[in-house]
Image (cartoon, rainbow, N blue to C red; front, side):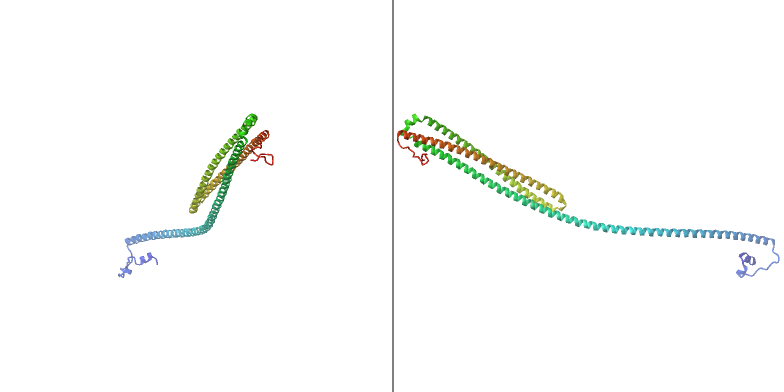
Length: 353
């Protein structure tokens, strides 16, 4: 039963309110009919409007449901995308974690390798320093010993030359003086003045030659003394070189200590060590040059010594000739005068000294 039919049966709601129903009229009035019609029309309009409103509400509800479904689908798609993105981020994080772990392992291995290289470099540096020091010390000791030997030999040679020159000169002078004193007695002064002027001139010439040879020997002795002074200067230079070598060795030890205390600057410490080694090589070369110069000076002195020996031999021969001339003169005079010679003859035909 519709709402309009209920209103027709009870238009004023009297039955619902429990009020007594009005008396029914057999014929309604025109005004009541008009009112009823108007009310019916209003009710119909309201009914149509309510139907339109309900239809509009249904459409709105359907639209809202569709919007909700669309939002739900979008939210689900967004959730799936977020989940996928989170999965990719997680995979990327795992990849970066594994990469970081591999990098850490690689860096650890490289650090261990660098530590090994550093230890090897330190051992090689220490070995090189020790070998260099041993080689330099051995070379310095050998050069020092060689120099001492050369200096000793040179001193011995100079002393021998001086002794030989002094002995020869003194012997010649003594023998000449003795023979002259013995060969010119007072008994034959007139005979010597008349018969031996040529012999006296020859003797004077021989004496002058002997004097010149003696002067030559003296000059050679001065040259040897000058060479000895030069050798002493070379000795002092070599001593200063040895001191410089010891100072360089101390500087090298200091460089090694600095290298061990500062491993980060091992490259610069190695370069400095190489420079020190080169400097030591140059010092060794300089010492070898000095020793070579000493050897050359020794050879020159030996040559001068041989020359001096040759001159002394010539002087000795000249003195021997002078002695023979004096002996012959004494023999001639003694034979002419018929007296025994002042100097007896030897078994070889020469006068005994």
